[in-house]
Image 1: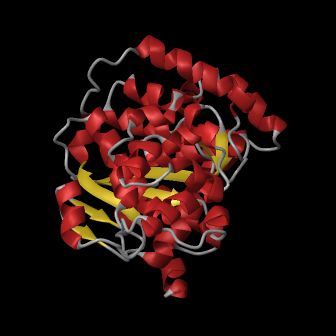
Image 2 (image 1 turned 30 degrees about the horizontal axis):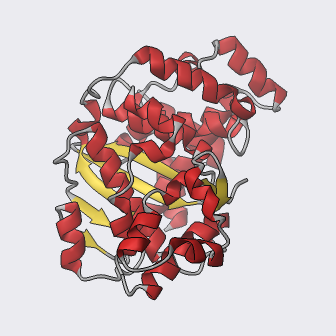
Length: 336
């Protein structure tokens, strides 16, 4: 299951292939996809087959921006129930957070991360390492994913939304002007991630026409699918929610339990069945992030303490002594 994706990811592909003078069915079969899967959005196909069919089409029809073109046919609807949760969130930030939490229902092979850093927010799209290692060419799938993300943002925010900048992990295949016309901003290739930078105030904008009752109903449904455990179990789900919530200071047991539509005691009980506690998960998330930021950034300690959800730098320092046996400054120095 971890390397699959819903066949709704093929939305628009037959029409695009036909417009380029090709025949969709033989192309799909060559990539290991049953043509009938296109008409069944609830069916899953191998993620590598989606990558393969995009690359085949781009090469066969001499269309280097095939993935980007396909993204114009896609949007929030391809996510199915996950898209419904996003569409009925109170704000854009809540929509993206919900999509990130339940994205495994669309494809466990991918994940998204949204972080606000002062006036600028960053969106990152990632293929999980164990899946990415099995793929040869990432260009077309990267461009499809980033293009579709733009369509989703425009559905949630406004039709004229444009990011401040766009980053591609891969080397772009089409002229730079093609991408800058599509995204409406500077686009840089061969970066360390796929992602957007955009104004953080966008996250607070309300989603027009949202219905909290519909959102809650779908969350309850998805929380019940495979026990609401995602691909790595409830502890991994809680870990993911806590990591995103740390900078907002809304990472307490009650806050996280509410996002799972569970009573706090129920969440604690289910975590205990997995041999862990909520407090242990939060502490481990903080330790992991502290280690990463101290080793790889020059972020001031007061700012880092804030990012990790500490109200005082002294509390952060005490945690570092417990985790690493030394002060934050000393741990940073040993990693230099």
